[in-house]
Image (cartoon, rainbow, N blue to C red):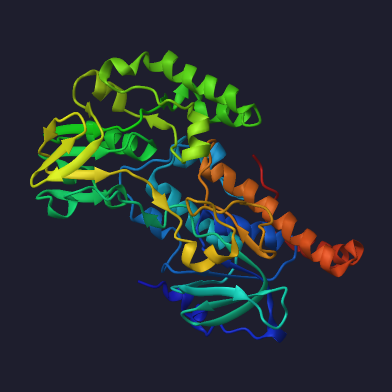
Length: 421
């Protein structure tokens, strides 16, 4: 239901060239909010739109046992810290409450319930963009897409899946852990989402729990000798790839020993390399390993096909689960909007986030997961984006001094303190 205080945002969005805003931000999740904060600090006129009805809508739909895998110190957005009352690893509800506070702190009117239908070059200015929406047309010199990395669930095309007699769902529809009490559950995927679901169900009352792993998994603890592991990862983020691979693998081995003894082998690629090349995140343990060691969770091979009530694996074995949960990732869903501009890679992800893309004036934040923590990365991307937008305008105006004179009073007037990380 739309919040009554937002009735004023329902006016038509149409903007003419004469009333052009500086930047249109599509998406009002954490990435979009961070981008709005940094752009406002630099005196830019922004307009935010989002297809949801309220802030944090995707987070509200996640299961009620969810907690951030990243420490609150590394999960705050620019200018406003997550309060200590949220705990070291905030719950779903605590993080939604933080996003609500951040929306009020930002003070930007967000147009909710607005879908983008097309994005094109402005035929008049040739240096701007036209954004077609469900409530009108907008013109802006710069457009920021902050729609997130997980808009479209990715479901493999398994043979026989359409005739499966049990329940087949994507991890995005997981719901509540108690929904699986008394059921035989097969989780497909040993990445971060799959292990997170296993963490939840290992503490529940399911009748059986299996995980299908195709190419191994690297599992690490939340803390190493009492220190949040993410803090160490952030400290090493500028290290060479081979060093991050080696330290992450060593951390897993020191914490849990050889998990291949329980049929969970390490992947052929290092954890950081695999993340960069394949988009598979390192998994965070919160009960999964104990369940594996205790026999509560069992590892099975890659799925070959579905056959009626059974799932058949590549080694010839079979299982008859009540529920199959595909923790098989997402796609950004950006191809229909901007795929023709050559700004996306083969997986549909922006080639550049937080910086200038090959299509001048088209920017991306938040569509790539980050090995060192997604929320930590959003502030960094937002600052890079804002600097890039300013430089583009300086280059166009040809006078850095004139731009600074216009921006400086706006920066002084901002009530938001500088980000602290």
